[in-house]
Amino acid sequence: MAVLFPLDVNGLRQPGFSFGSAMNEVNQRLQREAQRIASRHPMPEFYTRFKAPVALARKLFYGEPTVVRMREIVRSILQEDLGHGLFHSTHVSLDCAVLIWVEMQALRFSDTDLERLMVLGLLAGLLHDICRSEENHAEAGAREALRLLRDFPVTEVEADCLCAAIRNHEAFTVPRPCRLPWIQLVSDCLYDSDKFRWGADTFTHTLWCMADCRGLSPRQILEKFPWGMSGILRIVETFRTPTGREFGPEIIMTGVEIGKEIYRYLLNWCREETNAQ
Ligand SMILES: [Fe+2]
Ligand SMILES: [Fe+2]
Image (cartoon, rainbow, N blue to C red; front, side, top):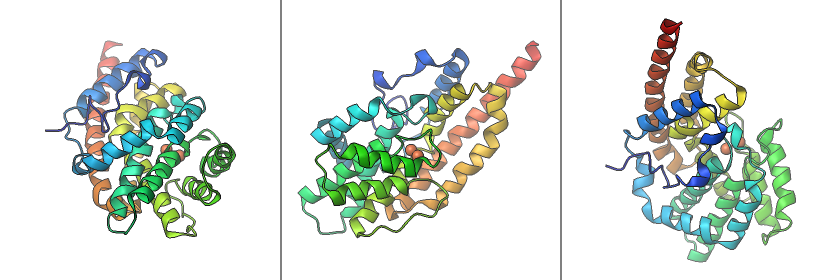
């Protein structure tokens, strides 16, 4: 059975994605426990069904010169302590490119056009959270992306596409319609791949980075848990592509199941802490 951890959804547990040294010890322990819990869950079908596009997306992500250069640039901009750094953006990028590949199978496109759209999907994923700490980070990110893209070999309409997708990636907002069907496709795929992160990644990664950054104790994390879980459940209804609507709910519900186990673990943790006082 393919499992979610320690291999991770895209085999991305590389040394560069470890934040243990910067995180406080309690959060490190809780994150390790969350990863142990996640390792018992099967990998969602999206990652086992589409192995060929997953491999192609990875090849482009690590080998296509524009993507490689953009990754180096955003590495220093992205804010790992908010849980939306290179780990998050890498997964969004790869899933976005896979979604584009799957969605395009029903359409008549050459391999060259397909790969170009996948490259745009990878760039969109890398760029979408570059202004994560700013007010209206989607709009601010779109503006900053446009500035960065001036030095990249992308056409005006491709830059337009990336900005439209970044502008539209925020959850629970009404997206702006895009002016061309292929721009709409990249925009919808970026949204869905970003929301796939609300599954297991929330509990194996994002939660602990955010808790650590905000100085939350396990008890404070516990208090916010029901609110966080209700938001995660609401995202299921918002997927925008047919593939996202088909495979996204399983990704989210896998995260919810992991979350429930972590919630029980945290309850016990807090109980034991109270008894020890
Ligand atoms: Fe975002
Ligand atoms: Fe994101």
